[in-house]
Image: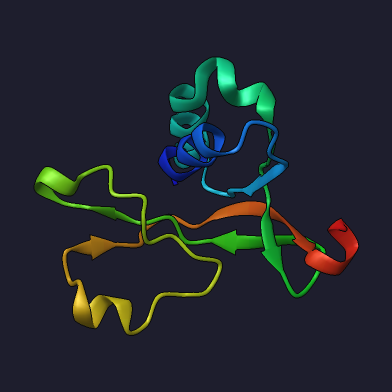
Length: 106
């Protein structure tokens, strides 16, 4: 979500072809900040992969207390069982995001 794994791939592979997908605007900002000058070595697509092209409600996650900016549980699917396991996570304000079918993206 924040580019940590992407940085590791860039360290391990001198000439990678990395295609990154992220629909959450908060995670996108952290990703760009973390990668900094290395951002030009990856292709970031600010979309969600889905079964259809268009737009959909993305349910960004948030939380209370120390996890206030928790953005690791967002989904284009409405949360259900997640709240049973992690009742401190909140899904309060869906945002509209672009979606693309992987077959059409390729």
